[in-house]
Structures are given as structure tokens and as C-alpha cells.
Length: 178
Figure 1 (cartoon, rainbow, N blue to C red):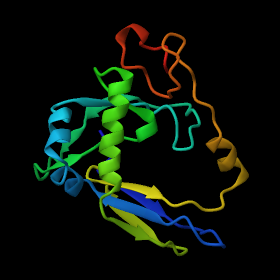
Figure 2: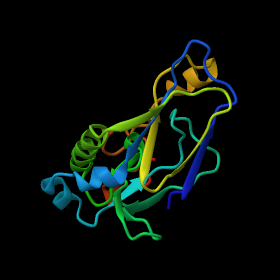
Figure 3: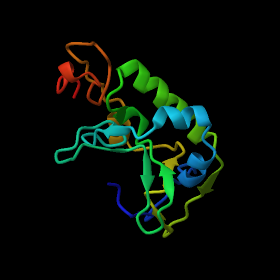
Figure 4: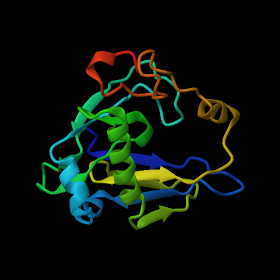
């Protein structure tokens, strides 16, 4: 389950600009989802590999989990689309190609939604409900360590040869695609 609240603060910002953070309303993403995509989701779950950070670097302590693609916020009963991080996710029970195609369609729809962007200033803090909003940052001149991490290689499944960070959808490959 994602945390109810997430917080970003800016103790420093890039001197040459960039790094704005965008937010997308996932209630709206679900409400505007074409009926054909909604029917393909049904009550499916999505596997999220929490073993790597957003730069692709393996974490020492992490939890991987499956969760519904459509989440219900318990306090309101309102549903939101929750597609997980694209490169670290696959849809449980679907072959890899079908999972990738459905996730690509969901992300194409999601990223076409209006987004609010915050241009950071030193000392800024943003708090949001992580269960019904997603965020991303625009590019900026990053440190060498982050640059190095962004070049992390994906592992190849010994059975299906897929270049995936996450587990393969096929049960017979379970554990080999990690």
C-alpha cells in the first residue's frame, strides 16, 4: 500500500534551473479512462518491484508487492488509477507482451492528463496524497552519483530473455526475472 502522504522539500535547488516537479490527478485519470481500457483492467493487480530506486539502483532493504490497478481511498471510497512505476511493474497473470501493452496504454492515457508543475525555490515543501496523485520531475543537471545510477543495467531473464527489472508474468519463470 502506498503511503497516505508524501513530502518533498528543497534544501537546495539547481543553480541553472530545471528539476520542476509535476503532479497528475489519478482520480481524473481513472474518470477519463476509455471504456475499452477500463474493461481490460477489470480487477487486475500490478506487481511493483520495490527493489530498485527511480534511478534503477538496487536497494538493500525493500519490499516488492502486488496491488490493485484501481485503488480505493478508504477515507472517501473514491477510486483512483494506480499503475505503479512503469519500468518496475508488470500486470499479474498476463504474459509479458500483453502486460507491457496494457501498461503502455495506461501510461499514455495518464501522461496525457493535465499536470500541475512546481518550480522549486530553496525551502519549498510540498505534501500530497500519494494514493491519488503521481509525481515526476523534469530533467536537470544531476550529480555524478545520480548520473552513474541512471546508467544501471537491466537484468536479463535466463528463460525468456526479457530485459526487465521486474519479475516475469510467467509462473514457470518466477524468480528468474528479478
